[in-house]
Length: 110
Length: 113
Image 1 (cartoon, rainbow over the protein chains, first blue to last red):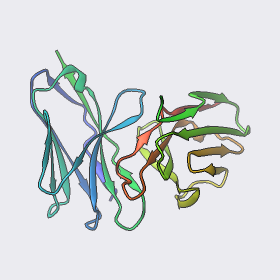
Image 2 (tube, rainbow over the protein chains, first blue to last red):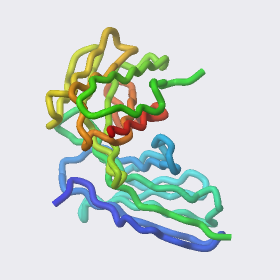
Image 3 (cartoon, chains in turn green, orange):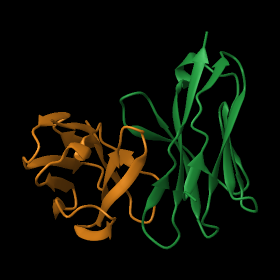
Image 4 (tube, rainbow over the protein chains, first blue to last red):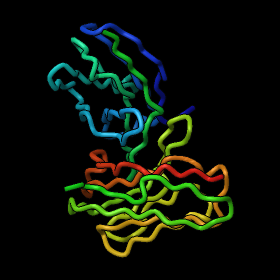
């Protein structure tokens, strides 16, 4: 089983829609969780951290479910500029490294 | 000012050659990384340095050798390049003890022919 797994997509949704995707992780001792965004042929950029109680940043909501070992990202009122690959990232508790999922591709159509 | 810069942006070279990719960060971070992103877009850590000290060395062929002359620089040297080395290589840095918040360079697209 991969350490971090994501549905690769693509998710193809109309502008204005709400879209959500999940990411599962295998190590129950994982400490920290993040969502990154990667545009085509660009570098990954931190989108938001994921806190235990869930957190929002504008149209984006991230949630953590430790019991089921997954994190989620919800995007409301999606914009064309949200089209990108979203990478789930988990910090390994035992080593100083972060582990990336393979990403979920999101495409917003007009 | 570019926070994490790596050069070159593109590198096309023949099999068997030796090449280097340079990376510099001006964020004052203690930790730097090299990641490889293959054709399937999977981003995998190769090395991590904390204040010039190697702390992570994943299962990477020893043809790959990182070098950190100071905590602001982490270079990657690759010997005897193979076709399978073709990928995008990303350098990144993060504050110590805050490894999740990494800043990435723009990537070096390596093509081995």
